[in-house]
Amino acid sequence: MTSQGSVQFQEKVSRLLSRQNGKPVLKPNRPLVLKDSVANRKPKKGEATCITDMSILMACWKQNNFLDSLCSTEIDSFYTCVQKAQAAMKSKGDQSSMTGGRLPPKQATALLKRFPNLKTEI
Image 1 (cartoon, rainbow, N blue to C red):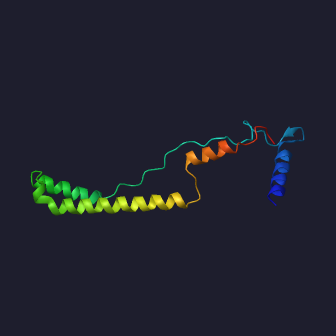
Image 2 (tube, helix red, strand yellow; image 1 turned 90 degrees about the horizontal axis):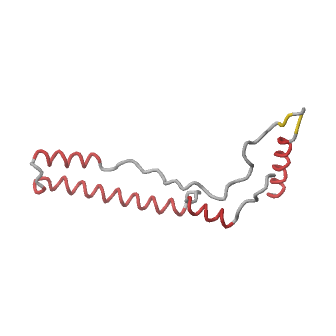
Image 3 (cartoon, rainbow, N blue to C red; image 1 turned 90 degrees about the vertical axis):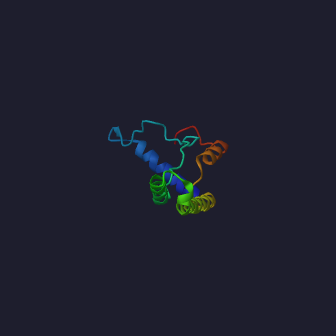
C-alpha cells in the first residue's frame, strides 16, 4: 500500500515537472531530496518559576538589612518552590523523552545517517 502511494506521488511530481504548453509547471530551485542531517537546535527554555517568592524574599532582605535569620520563612518558601519546580521539570523531561512523537535532533541525524536518502531526484 505504501509503495503504491509513493508511486502515485512520484507520478504527480513528474507530471508537475513535465512541460505543459511549453513551460514547466513547477521549477524547483533546489534538488527535491531530503538532507541527511537535521539542524541541531536546542529546545526552548520554559518560563521563569518562583519569581513571586524570590521578590518577597528580596523585599524581606531589604527591610532587614540582608539578615537571613529574620527572613527564614521567606527563604524556606522560596526553596520549597524551587524544589517543586525542579521536580516538575524533571518529570516533564522524562515524559517528553518517552512519548511526544518527536526525536531529539542528534537522534534524528544519527538515524538519517544510518539510512541515507537517495542522492538523485525523482
